[in-house]
Amino acid sequence: YHCYGYKSLSGNTWRNSLKAISIWYLKPSWKRVGIGSSEADLSSYAGGMGAGGGQFMVTWSTSSAPSDADDHSTYEFAAEFTVPGTITAAGAPSSAGAKCSDGSYFVEVDVSCTRGACNLPAKMYTGTGFNRICYDKAYGLVSPSSTNNQCDWSIDTQPFKALYVGSDDGNYHCYGYK
Image (tube, rainbow, N blue to C red; front, side, top):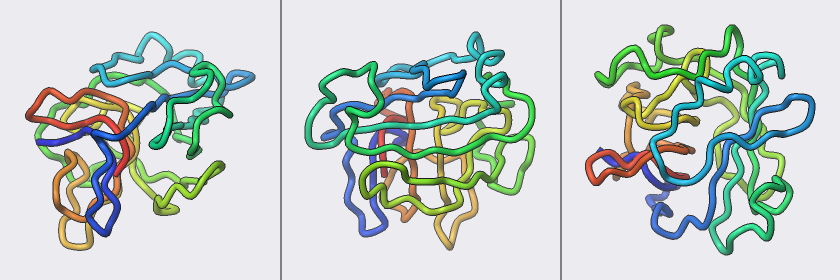
């Protein structure tokens, strides 16, 4: 499974050319919590994330590293979304390849590109409570293909869209932008 990188609907994969990616939450200003390509556990930040109204931003750069990784405005792209309900930022209930319609795993969110040409759908899925997705290897967003409604998915040749901050262990590529 490949949950690392970016792949556009035309088939372009950017996982190996991604220069930086970070997760931010609003409380009262943007706070960076998820960075790089490691399997993260953000559950210790759940209280702050929830206090910020469940508002999140993922920033990434593909052509050059940001001049200041702690300043979200120095990244090339930014997408914002709000996760409804209680924020837990925990592991997925399991890593069995759940469908988008399974509310114990996924919730649909409105995605707004606030910097750059993000090339992301206006509606995507994230983990319920902002829990990990991509076989429990990443936090982020995913949009299924028209022929496969599984959201627990890692980046491969299928026409999914994804924005993941997580791990790339050789089997699951859960880091980057597709």
